[in-house]
Length: 287
Ligand code: FAD
Image 1 (tube, helix red, strand yellow):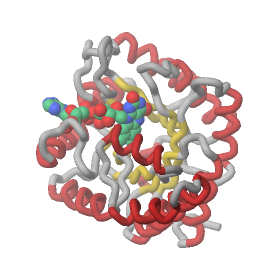
Image 2: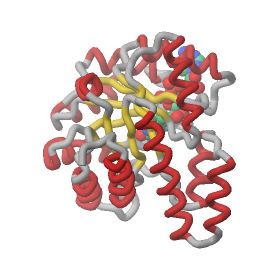
Image 3: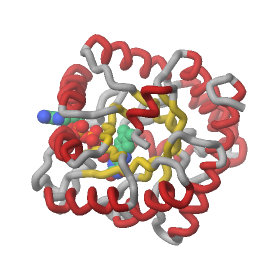
Image 4: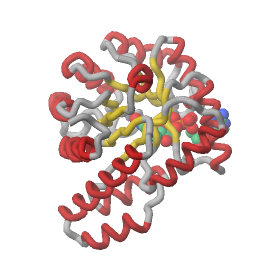
């Protein structure tokens, strides 16, 4: 099923997983997806790593298992830096033969050996994927993309990307919902009319929070820091602080009429269950 059709019908609930890397097998990743699907998500997205972990080959594979085996729509990510048109076409053929209709069009992060070949920005990739008949999502950044000099310039680029054919947007993680509400208003003023799905990453520890915010430039509100200080060095307490905060955050988003909520599950089914139950509790999802 195309995600644009889902979003035309209802507010969505979805998860992100990453394909197997390191010691994880494809079967274990499929098991994670199966457990997450017990909560009836509208789709599961599967990340794409063109870099060091080199698991991009497995994005289409695990996506196929989600679509065909588990019976849930898959959203396959694709980054375009370092890829030629022929590479992208081959990837799209793999997705289509796996029954996958949805792709998240991304530029990816620049790295040595990953320079632009046929695509410099995600907005170059979008029309190519649309021409191939895919339902295409794009990334957006409520606090601005880490490389961009101003929020206005970033929004200008986002508008060009949407006008190139994006069907829906998924945000980078954020911890202050006010950042998202301001972003949503700016998008409306800019006549960016596609649905915007909120990507929420519950923090699981102090270390993980520092790593992920440093990588993407998202800010950490003082109230998050206070909760982590209260949790001290107790890893279980840090995890619980992260889950409690994420649940409060998504319940507030649900009450403020967002188009969708996408949980960065980090391949942990318990994160999927906890966030799902919070959304059932507030009436966003059926019991
Ligand atoms: P773009 O939309 O191309 O924007 C990149 C930067 O260029 C921005 O600063 C933008 O303002 C600027 N820009 C855009 N167009 C122009 C122009 N014409 N002229 C000048 N500047 C311009 N990374 C992965 O490697 N794998 C993943 O699976 C993955 N999944 C992600 C999922 C989500 C929901 C998000 C939010 C990010 C994800 N990323 C992933 C990270 C992403 O690849 C990086 O954030 C990357 O740096 C930007 O990708 P983009 O598609 O947003 O780029």
